[in-house]
Image 1 (cartoon, helix red, strand yellow):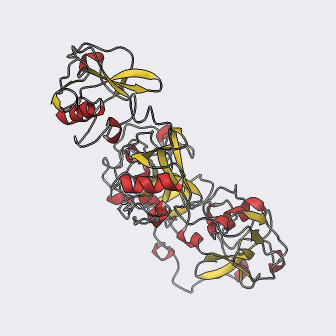
Image 2: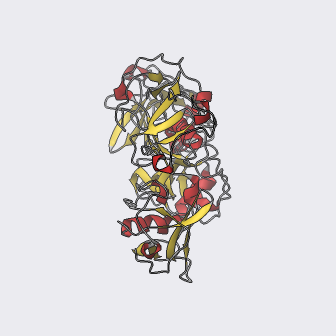
Length: 473
């Protein structure tokens, strides 16, 4: 007789071991919901065991987590705890449906390195200002076991019977519902390009042992086969005459060899994104420099690097942050050849996404044209920059002599004498385009400084920045 909170059956009340009046016709069984659970943590209502609403067990009651402050670092801890690989997303707003009963945690603030969400800072248990429309969820890449997929019995690395590793044993996949979308996931996972066909009926011979998966139903976009909906491991109505196979096109580019620039004005300027495990993700700006940017520009056929802007200059990305701690020499063929932390290992947020501006880009607006307006001479005045065909001003927050020095150098007016704020040369009109400019003073143009996002500020024109330059340089 169990109350439901016991950790194992041995803790429940029962007759002495071996005392019964039963026959095997009375053997009991259980059927569990599609839920990933480990100890006091579980995922509910997701499409697979590694995605869903986050729930925690406390005081013998399951409860949810509020999405206030919930981010990819919190999700990373949950995914790691459940053995579900790395976090791909941290959806809030009850993305996987509203929970019931208590909301246990609010304002969770993990660093991403913890082994359990219980190690993360948070408000006290049950202390929150949330409702279940704010329940937090996670989408994980999948069980690390999903990395272990092989193709056998064809004589080719990129074709054969599909076998997956689970519970320490290799087993096959049943061909019920097996199609090209499922095959695409397998081909990508084993690094064999695109799926050409998805043969069933043991075309590559009958396997032996377990049939691990049945009724697999991938969309084709999943990073691992185990991330696809399917019947529970080992549950099937098949025999080995129904073993599934794949025929793939061949090898695909190495990790880091597929790069794109997003959010920019053209193909040669933007936020750097790389493809890994079937998903596009960003690069953290920690250690991001001209050498790394040069690798990207050359790889994309975009000429020389103009600048390597940090801090999500072209907007914040979505999904995983794939690379951090990049150290490139500048001669590598692609970012994957540079030294870096393990894929997905980082301590960053998307406001640290790295970007590049290459010479092949139409960079007249991303390497800003600068002018001085409202001053008594051509070498002093209100600083204005051109962006998206509009002139706008610069806010004086953090504006100092180092920023002025770069501006004076860029407009050919020698060294900076002063960096007046408070609209010293009169208030501008139109947009305020830059705020919290952070130059070292050594840059040749403002484009090389830490500029933040275009048009994002908390200023008014009474805070327009200006410069006083020494004269012609």
